[in-house]
Amino acid sequence: MLHLDSSTVYYWYNGAVSMRSSFDALCGLVNQHCQTTVLKGGVYIFINKKRNQIKLLTWEGDGLAIYYKRLERGVYELPAIAANSNSATIDAVQLQLILQGIVLNSVRKKCIDPLNSWTRL
Image (cartoon, rainbow, N blue to C red; front, top):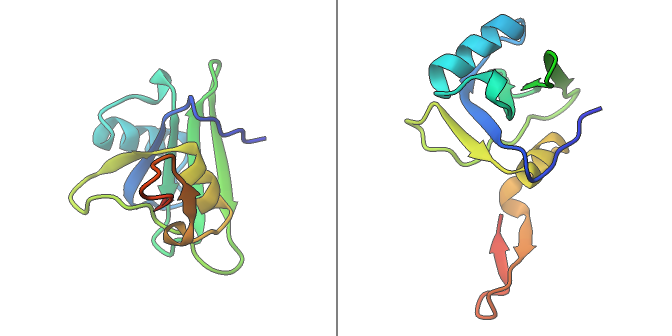
């Protein structure tokens, strides 16, 4: 079962990936484009061109694990990432909303700032 927590770093790969890619190919993308290695921890997120399939790759201490989900209808929301960037980090809340099919810019999060009590996620 997938568990998302705020202490984990979530790396979003900014590009389309073939969902036929498995452990070695995804690890190669991490090494090449994320300037890190899967063995350092974190969760690496990949999405296909149609945006209806997503894979999460993580190192669990004794081996690699892949979480794979395909939507029957609709597409996954993409987080705001600079177009010239190969990857970016997102937080656990954003990833959970994406996996649940929630439109990110429609979410309002209560903020502590008394002058601006609501902020977009």
